[in-house]
Length: 111
Image 1 (spheres, rainbow, N blue to C red):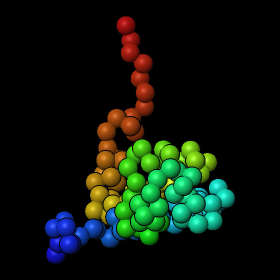
Image 2: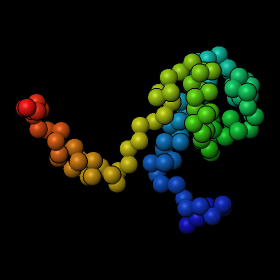
Image 3: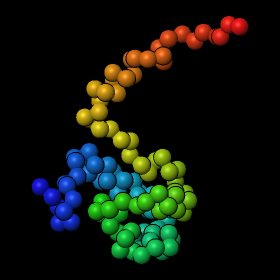
Image 4: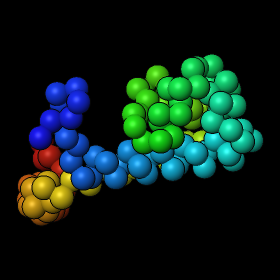
């Protein structure tokens, strides 16, 4: 079933990631001393409506805004972004983890 814009619905892990980001963004804003969403938007130099959609988990920022959020709110970028865990990819990752050259001892080239 498609949403209003004709796009396929988000997968559960995508929704959880957006919700986690929204919570982390709100905490970062408050920790930086901006009590309201509008104050956070002003500090970032953007429209309040766009910022509010991020905190409501209705949208997410692009890479430019992620960097700006990190700088203005004084928070490491990697702490804003939730770890991606796609349950469908788990068997592939587990299989790849045990295979290949990673488990072989290093041998220096002779010559």
